[in-house]
Length: 271
Image 1 (cartoon, one colour):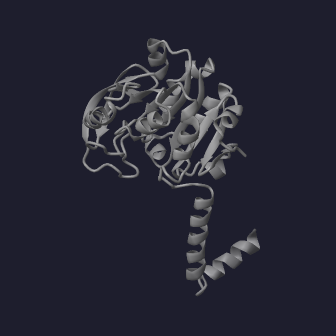
Image 2: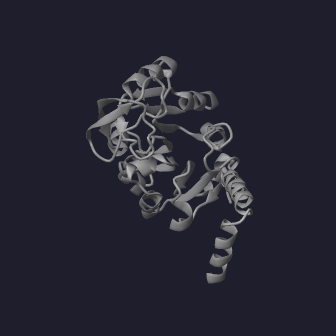
């Protein structure tokens, strides 16, 4: 290690430094693409693939952080019989959600946030349709643009599921801009009862603002017997957490299942 450090120090002071740094940047970009990191495109990052494959088999799905309802609309197109419960905390975006999918008979809208406990929290509302709105203050990454803070009701999904009289849910999608971990904590009873087949949650730079760690989500889900998979463009990949490798806060999606055979039933390759 000492010799390697000495060689690197000499190269850093030589004309080779610039081209090597350029190459390192390209290699980082390559590994991000290969590992499906920092790809927010629904059509290519695997989110659309999982929805298209899975939705025809679903009876009930939860869309937490529904935004304008694109996901709910696509699920119903793939399976008109699937009942979708869409949760949107932003008051301004909720109106767009209602306008776009409120007429669909199998879609139920919930003007509220999901979290670990019942209550009311300050919500940073970036405006109609914004994907940056969140319960999380974006101080570290500076993503907010002069947002409007409004009080919003928050409920655990455990309580909502019980109130709706649902014995089980096929799929829960969680996209709450850094507030994913409290949402997952509000699912503890559902997870303990194995009453949800698959939970998909987003991870990324917003978790840095929230002070959350992927380790905490993995521990919660695995503690209830769920196995974690990383979402790839056309498959899912079994995931084993490693702090040095995985706590990078790069955008990615994970799926947790208590029975991996669900992927076979949905026609989703796994590795």
